[in-house]
Image 1 (cartoon, helix red, strand yellow):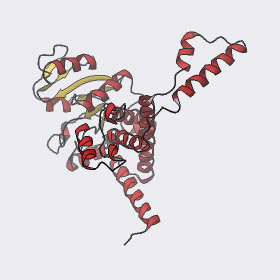
Image 2 (cartoon, rainbow, N blue to C red; image 1 turned 120 degrees about the vertical axis):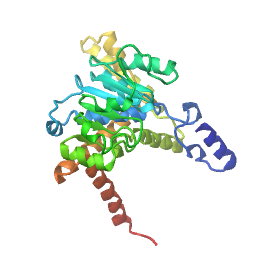
Image 3 (cartoon, rainbow, N blue to C red; image 1 turned 60 degrees about the vertical axis):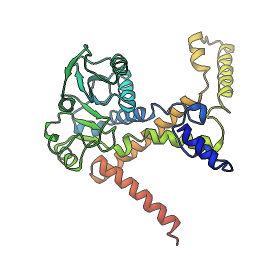
Image 4 (cartoon, helix red, strand yellow; image 1 turned 180 degrees about the vertical axis):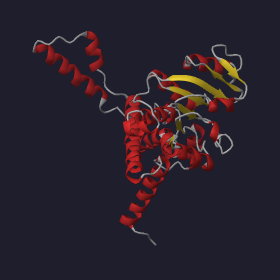
Length: 314
């Protein structure tokens, strides 16, 4: 992406916004901190929001909270790894991970960092990993017992010919189009809850938008506020101690932190994913439709609204 940016700027030297011609750039080349894991983190936020909605969870007979729920992840690349990392950090149990050469199952849970380290050091292969059962056909892992199945790699992996074998109660579409139309129709009728890719894997493009805004503003997020916030919280700690309240060093350290760019990006991404997910849930409940149809309804309504306000010209 840095090459594309540089080439564009060489060809269009008079474009003062040329640095924003492409996103996903290294941070040192006008990129934004937090972009690398943004798609997977967005997937996590979407799943986290689902597990706070008791009405939806009742439909699939699950209790609130990620902790203790079982997950199977297809794909240990940039999306699958970051999603699995955050799921595990929240107490979720990753019992299966599938990749191109096969997959690994462990009903007691896999250590995401450990298996990722092995995967990267073994030329992108899982074969030979000893802390779980290796399954040669990675497609079989999609049919494993779990609460949530997260296809985070390929399109069309859940089809009409294997949909009946899916045992997951929730499918979180981290990849683009991992569930075909026929499979979606069958699974939805069967009561499986599908978090649609239209929303769930939008974390990457959301943070790319933040990067574009940063480029147009020519100012790193947090530059104008971080030190001010730190000093303000230092003053709060001092005032508390002046009135006789003891502020421990550990509490002072936690309070005296101004948000840097990455923290602001993560906060903005969480806000975007949580709000969009809630809006989708509301539309689904109000209209008695699936989450995918609700997401489409939201998108079409917004486009129609824009046309209604601005008119069609010429």
